[in-house]
Image 1 (cartoon, rainbow, N blue to C red):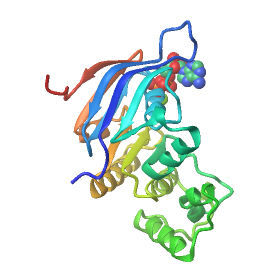
Image 2: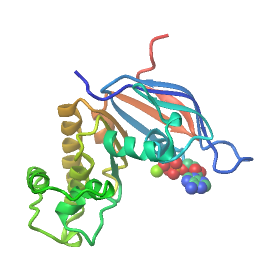
Image 3: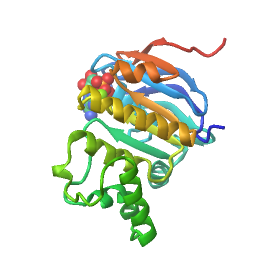
Image 4: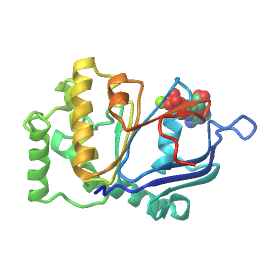
Length: 231
Ligand SMILES: Nc1ncnc2c1ncn2[C@@H]1O[C@H](COP(=O)(O)OP(=O)(O)O)[C@@H](O)[C@H]1O
Ligand SMILES: [Mg+2]
């Protein structure tokens, strides 16, 4: 049973400049609960912009993004941020770790966002999860980690709240092939174990082939959909 919600997009537009054509222009999209979905397309096609719209980091110029029962445009900024922290795990190409913090504190960073001091039990869980990802938390300095290890820490952070939604923007693009393959497996296993709805923006053929459904974007529009909904 998937615990991740379905996604419904209606008349979604994002314009950075009012006079220019929209960078995202998506009249309708439905993604079933618990789907593992890839979004691919040329550089500049609007993939990152769409990913940011889907998690509410970016606000649409028009239209709506609805996850399960939650319409993001109905939430104020604070509620949207809280929703994202609780519901969405985000993974980026370049990790977005905080080099001044220990590995453990990077995993726990959402606790600090909520102004909560992590408990001893939470610290122990963070260390156990790093170890399960193959990164000993005793290695304190982020900068001394390989890129693959940094992405594992970022993945442990993204998974901290057991998010029903996982969104990854080119999670393997800055990794070599073998390291990328490991991250692909960790990401897919985590999504499957939790029944999360997984959306990955990627050019990585290895990752694309593992996803149940593939969307191709071009100039902000949907060019192809491997699994269009039944008419
Ligand atoms: N903050 C921004 N301000 C203005 N234009 C932007 C901004 N971010 C992205 N764009 C433009 O929007 C288009 C889509 O970008 P992006 O979503 O990053 O594409 P992709 O991730 O597919 O490479 C590009 O033309 C890009 O230059
Ligand atoms: Mg991008």
